[in-house]
Image 1 (cartoon, rainbow, N blue to C red):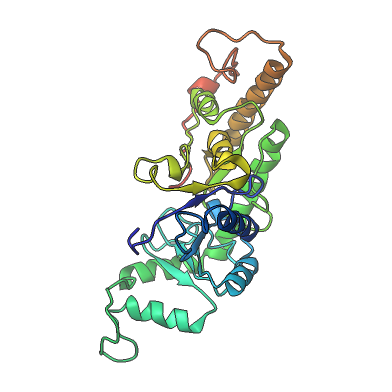
Image 2 (image 1 turned 180 degrees about the vertical axis):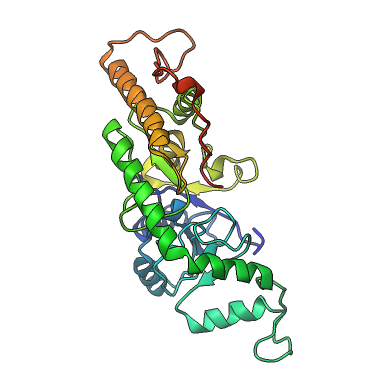
Length: 324
C-alpha cells in the first residue's frame, strides 16, 4: 500500500502454510484466461511470499520464478533468521527483541543481488553511498550503535542458544505429536525460531484448544486470527483462488486449526507435561465426538466437554505465552 500498489491475496499450500511459485503460476494463468489478469487486467508488480513462523522456503524456486516471469519477489522472513537460505530475492529478517537473534528492534535485508544490496544501503542512509552526496531520496533507516551492539552480543551467543532452542523444540514435538498435533516441516530438526505454532488434530478448533489450555494454566496465541485478508483494513481488497471460487479455503482451515503455544529455552518437563495432557484430552474427546460416542453438553465446545485436569494442574504456574 505504501508503494501505491493494490494487494491481491492468494491462498497458501495447506501442507507448508506458505505461498509457492506453483500456486502463483496457476493463479496467473487462470487470471489471464478469465479476465486478462489477477484483478481488472492490472499487471502484477511483485509477489510477496511469507516464511510463516520461520519456515525454510525454497528461495531458489522463487528466484527461478522471478527470472522466468520477470515479476520481482520479496520475502517476508521476519522469523526466519535460522531457516533462511539467501537467494537473489530480497528477504527481510526481523531483529525484534522476541526473535532468536535480537537487536531489540530493527532488522536487515538479505540478498545475493549486489546491485539491490547497494540500493537498499543507499536508501537507508539518506541516499548516500560512499560519500556524503545524496544520489537518490533516502531516509535514516540505519541500526543505531546501541542496537548493533546488542545484536552482535546476541549473535556471539547464537550457536549455544540455537542448541538449546532445538533441544526444547524436539522435546515438545516428541510429547505432542502422538496426540494429533502437527509441527511445521523441519521445525527443531533443520531450523528453529522463537515461536512454536502447531496445527491441531482434526476436529479440534483453535478457540476450543485455547480455552482448554487456558484452564490448564497455559497461555496461547492465535497469531493469524481469521487471516490477514479478513481484517477490516484489507477485507475490501481482491483475493484469488481458482480452485475454490476465490475462497481462500486453505487459509481459512489453517486460521481455524493453528495455535501458538509456549516456547522458550527454559521450558520445563512439567510445562511440557501439562500441555501434553491437555492435548491428549482434546484429541481423545475429538475422536469420541467423531465416532458419536460422547454427548456434548449444551453450549460447551466439543474439545472441552468432560475435560478432566489431573490433580493440581488447575493451579499450575501459568506458562509464558509464545513470543510476539
